Figure 1 (cartoon, rainbow, N blue to C red):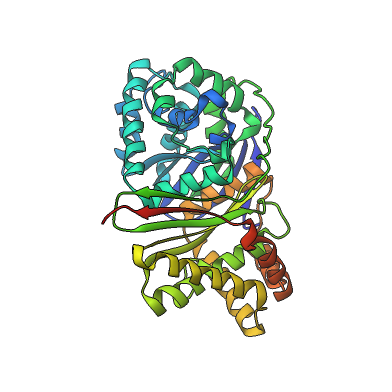
Figure 2 (cartoon, rainbow, N blue to C red):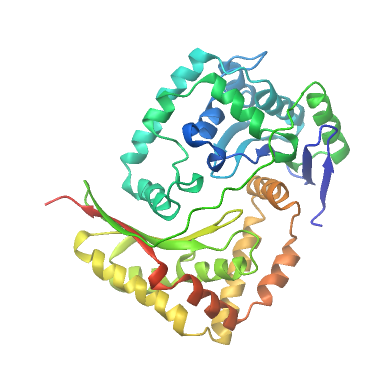
Length: 412
C-alpha cells in the first residue's frame, strides 16, 4: 500500500516508513496523549511537557538539544493537540542516525530540570497572553469550550495562567507514566533509508528504554450538548464570529461526505461558496472560512468570520443562507463532479508535502491502525452521491443545533 512498510519494534512501538529518493527526510514520534487526556488539575500539562522535553536529557543540556539538528541544516520541532503530542524533525537523509538518536533521547531520557521548567512557565504564559491579544485565534478556543463544556476537548491546550504556574515536575512524571506507553506511540518516517536500516537504528536507541505499560486510553464522552449563543465585548476594530456544532467522529461513515461539504462551503479554494457569494460579491469580510475537525469519538464543524461591526449581522445572515441552500438544494451532476475533482486534487497535491505525509501516516497508524491509499480515498470520494450530501447537510447544518460566539467590537 503506497510502498509503505509497517513493523513493530521489540518494545511494542509501531513504525511506519515510506522510502523516497529525495535529499530531505522527515522523522518523528507521535504519542496518543493530548490535552483531552489531562485530569482536572492538569490543564495544560500535555503542552507543558512538550516544552519541557527540550530542556535537558541525561546527556544533553537545552542548548545541545536545540543545536543538534540545526548544526547540520535540519529542523527540530514539536506540537501538542487535543489528542496527540508530536516531536518531529526534517533533515538531510544522511543525518537519519542523528535525528533518530536525538528524538529518542528527548522522548525517553528527558530529566525535566526544575529550574529550566520554571523558566518555561513564563514562556507559556507569554504564549497565552499573545493568544488573548489575537481575537481571531482566541475565539476558536472559547468556542470549543462552549461546544464541549467541562470536557478535555473544550479546554485550552495551553492551560490557564494559574494552572501553568502550579505545574510540578512530579506531575509531569505521573502524566508520562500514565500516557506514554508503547501501544500509544508510533514512529513515522519518510526519507531515503531502507526499512531494515531504520529498524536497526531504532532498536539500538530503544534497547535500554523501559516504558511503563501505562493505562489503557479511555475516551471520556463529552457531556450532553445544548446549543448556546453567546456574545462578548472585546477591544479592537472587527467583530469576530464563530458558529457551528458537534459533528461526526473520524471513523464515521459520513465523515468524508461532511469533509466534502465543508470544502464546498468554505474550504481553501477561492471558489468556495462563502468566498464567492459573500466576500467577492459584497466585500464584507477578508477572512471567512468553514472548518471540520474530526476527533476519535466526536467532531466539530464551524464557520469563522471577521468583519466590520456595521456588516456583522448581515454577513451572518448571508452565511445562514448558504447553509440553507446546502440543506435544501441537491448538487447537480456537474457541481458534484467538480467538487469531487477539487477535493481529490487538493489531496493529491498534499501528497507532495513529505513532511505532512510523515505526520499523516503516523497519525493514521496511531489512531486507526491502518493507512488508506490514495486509490482507496479516490474510490470513497467517487462513490459519494448528492443524496448523501444533502442528508448530511440536513443533519449537521440545522440552525436549531448551531451554537455561536460573537466578539462584538468595543470601539466607538
